[in-house]
Length: 310
Image 1 (cartoon, one colour):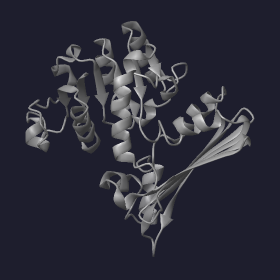
Image 2 (spheres, one colour):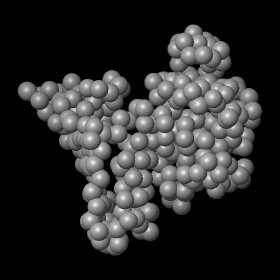
Image 3 (cartoon, rainbow, N blue to C red):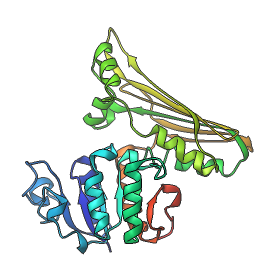
C-alpha cells in the first residue's frame, strides 16, 4: 500500500484517485487550486469514498508524510516546476502526466536541470508518464524496434476520434473553430497535442542515438465550409541510420487505432484495433508508475528507465 499525494483533481486526477483507492492505496493529500474545490472533501466533490479535504496549495500539506506525489495538472513544465521542485526537496518522488516532462534534457534545459539536481540530492526519482508521450508513440515502438536488427525506419500512426473524448481535448484540437481562428490559435501555441517531439527523443534514445534534423507540423482537418473537425500533426527526425516519423490525427470523424511499423530485420507491425483509450490508460500507467518509482535510480528519468517489476 502506498501513501499518495495527488496534485490536480480534474478529470484525469479524479480517475487516478479512484484507481488508487481501488488498488488499496491511501490517498492522504489532494491539492487543487480551483476555488470551487479547495476546502471541500473528496466525497463532497465526487462521492468517492474519501473524506480527505482538498487543499489549494501543496505547501500547505504535510507532504513528507507520503510515499509518492502524483501530479495531474499542466502539459507545460514551466507551469508546474515550482510545485514539483518543492515536493522533491522534501524527499518525495514525483510521477507526473506533464507531457513536457516525458523527455526533458538536463544538459540543455534549465528547468530539467533544476529538477534533476534536487531529485539526486534527495535520492528520489521524478518521471513523466502517460499514453502519449510515455507509451503508445514511444515506449511501445522502442520495445518493438528492439526486436529488429539495425532498423531503418520507425513509423507510428495514432488516430483518435475525439468525439468520444473530453471536451478539453476537443478544444485543444480546435474542434468547431473556423480555419482562420485555428491558424491563429496554432500560431500562438494554444492548439495541438504536446509531446510528439518528446516521443521522438525517447525512441531515438532507445536506439542509442540522439534525435537530429527534427521537423514538426500541424494542420486543421476541415469539414463543410470552414468548420474544423480536428487536427493532424506530425513529428519526424533522424536517429542515426533510422528515420523516425510520428503521425497523429485527432478529429470528430477519425477511426480509433494505433499502428506501429518498424522496417528492419525482421520488419514488424503492431496494430491496436480500437486504439489505446487515452484517459483510462493514462490513469493506469500513472498509478502503475507510482507503484514502481521507488525502485528507479535517483534523478530525472524517462519511462525507458522505469523498472517494470515492482
